[in-house]
Every structure is written in C-alpha cells, then in structure tokens.
Length: 186
Image 1: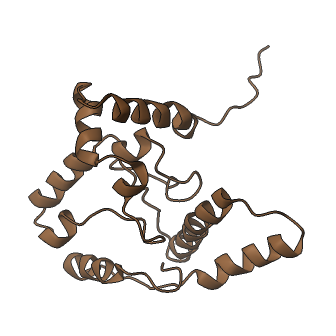
Image 2: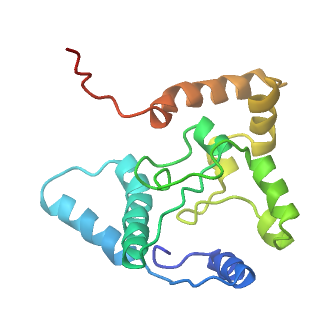
C-alpha cells in the first residue's frame, strides 16, 4: 500500500512471489490527501504527529477492507523490538486480529526468516516504514541489535542509549496495555 511512490515496493513484490500468495497494490495517497485536505478545510490545525500517523492508519483501514472482502483476517506484524519503544502506530500497523511476532525481537524474526529460507535481501533488509526516507534505526537513534540485546539481557554499554530506550519504552507503554474502561462492580 504505497503512499504515491514507495521506494522499496520491489521487496514486497519479491516476498509475495517467493511465498506465492495473492496480492494487490493499492495506492493510499489519495485517501491520505483527502483526509488531510478535509481536516484543513475544517479549520483543524494538522500536527506533525497526525501527518506521521495518518498513513499507517489508512493503510490498516485499507487492509481490513481487503481482508473483509475476502473473508480474511489481518496479521499484526509488529515485533517485540518495535513495540518495546513504541515504534508502531496505534490503530495503524499496531492493529490486527492476531500477532504472531509480538513476543519476538527483530533479531529473532530475522533468524526465523533464515530458517524459512526467505531471500537474504529480505531478511537482511534495513527496516524502513516505507513512508519516509529514513530507516527505523535512524529515527530511533540506536540499532535493533543494541535494543534486542537490552530487551533480552538487560545489558547495554552506552548510558545515553539506555536512557533513550527507557524513555521511549515508558512513554509508549500505553500502546501495549488494554484500553482503559469503566469497571462495573456490584
């Protein structure tokens, strides 16, 4: 689901060919621009976070539309590393009907990819969201290798990186918790 042109769409095409699964290419650019234009016309000041998070949310709505049209279910492909530091959009890529990777780090997911004989260029691909020109690690300010080791062992050599990871983890814990609700008690 590119937003206009997606620089790494060939990787998605390689994966669906390798797995021999049916696929569709649905460009979400018009949907994103339509919502942003309507917000602007309504006099709503659009924040930077809205601009960042709207595309994944529209992608997820589109994915649910495809799934429902084919009596399918949506897989949440977020992993423990991304979730740990909040690198997922709530009700965007963080949504789904089931989540097979949520307790696995990026390093562990890559190892599974190797065991499944996925093409090396996919397993070793630098993770990017496909919506910006930066890698996940550039945006986060540390590597998944460092993060994964810290998650699994508690070990980290750089104090500033530890502080950043802890800050992001605490800031985004709410994304991993059930939605708060009224608790009825008799």
